[in-house]
Image 1 (cartoon, one colour):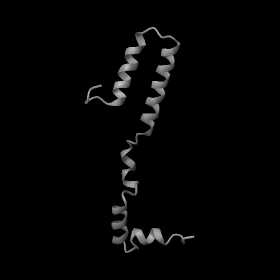
Image 2: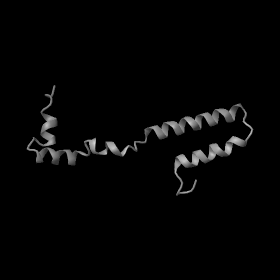
Image 3: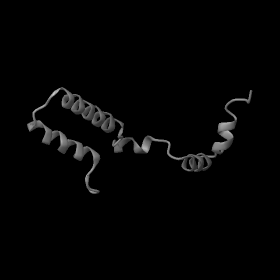
Image 4: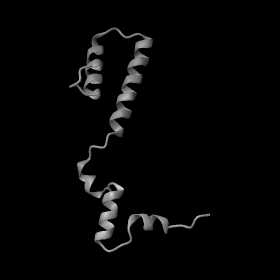
Length: 85
């Protein structure tokens, strides 16, 4: 696999090339496993740019937003939620 090709495009190329090959029982299981791996890989990738602004972001950013609005810093807010047992 070359450095400039992505995982998904390489798997797509492999699956397209395999359409013309005679398929036996073992190859069918391998192709099914590859297809499942691709589906799992692509379903975990979050590429929805509309939700980026709704995510809380790193603790540093959360802490600074809280301080700008006059609230307790993040460390105090996390510690005051519940008591130690």
